[in-house]
Amino acid sequence: MKRLLCAIAMLVAFIPFVGVKALNETTNYYSYKKGQIVNFYPNATEEAARNKKALETMIVEDKDTSSRFIKAWIMGGGVYSGSSADQTAAFINQYKTAYIDLLSKAKAADGLGVFPTTGAETDEKDNYMINFNDTSKGMDLITLDDLKTMFGDALSPVLTATTGTTDPSAALVDNTDNYTLSDVEIVNRVGEKTSLYDELELVVAVAKKIDEAGAKRGFYVLERNASGGIKQMWIAEFTWNGNDISGIQLRKAVTADANTTYLFMPTVYVNKTADCHEETPENHCYKCVNENGKFIFKWTTAGDKEVEKCEVQNDITSKKDCSELVKTGVESHILEFAIVAALCVIALIVVKRKDLFKTI
Image (cartoon, rainbow, N blue to C red; front, side):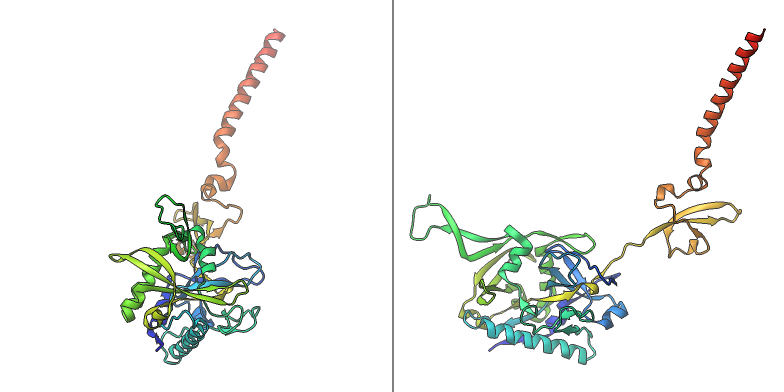
């Protein structure tokens, strides 16, 4: 019997992200690097409220600034049982239906209120995600190709001895029925570094509150054939060292896995304009008047109350140039001017004395 432990999807998928503001662009959109952690608003309500809730994802593909939507791996989902080597299509469709139903119930229950705004047309600017049931860009399982795209050689076949030989010196060959996924460094939207294993540990930490065994076992992965059809379900199994993931082994799912729970972490296509990210405050140079009536200059942000009545100096663009000496254009050269002027006066006196001597 297939089962979905629903509460987990909302707990994991929407992780608080402090100090965020959505991107507002009309023609060009953010460019991303595969494997990058990025947070997105799921709907207009969350974006307008700026309530620090966002969908944490990992970018699956490289995209330039001309594309509005991008494929992302949701760092959250349900703990689900039903994996079977011969029922992959039914498994995905059943989970997708349950996941969408779960999101609707969360919204209706006035819980987290995070139901994504989706639409069938990929170019609709008001859609926060492409419709989950879209045949080409809807909700899907993370695939072997996705993992390879994001993590490169970190996903590699297990090396085994050549089939049919017992010679210990025989060359090892790739066993494409088993893979390992090594730990790799990843970064978030503001350049902070973490690792794949650390990120997955965060997902498990929340998921295990509902189903500890299922969350700690690993997650589902899909293999598609050359034409994009479903070929094989895989299991990515965690190896633990205490509370830390020490390894990930991938193997093909078998019918016996049908009653064992694992994490279902889907991929979706998200709207880049809903990217919520920390903005670095922009500094400017301000010309102020102190209590003695003297001009002073400050390098700070527009929100600084000390410069509310000051005049911004748009022609000064760096902190080192934001000073009274630089601003006046005279004081900064007083010393040099004085030296040159003194030399000129000395030279003039010498010349005059020579003329006087010639006259005598």
